[in-house]
Length: 119
Image (cartoon, rainbow, N blue to C red; front, side, top):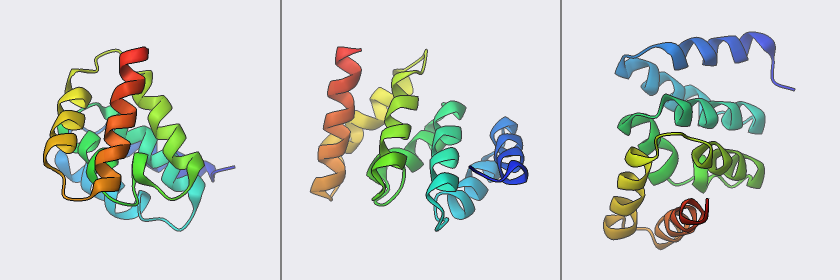
């Protein structure tokens, strides 16, 4: 179980509307060696539901839907599927599919977009 203090810090950063909160979540949370911290951070970035936070968990190798931990990747995908407004995530997925240089990242984006179409 994730440390309560760590969870509260991530939640507080999620509530902030400024770009620096996304940078902190990306640098410290998604790069954490702890799977649970990365999972909680990725879900928090998705819940922010803004371009910059969604981009972190969709286009970066080793983060969010591209995390090497299946638990982190699936948790991020489930959080994306639960969004009420999916317009921004769909734009980022389309851009990733069409323009990303890494084939694995492109394939993961295609898979998530397919899941969104079915939901």
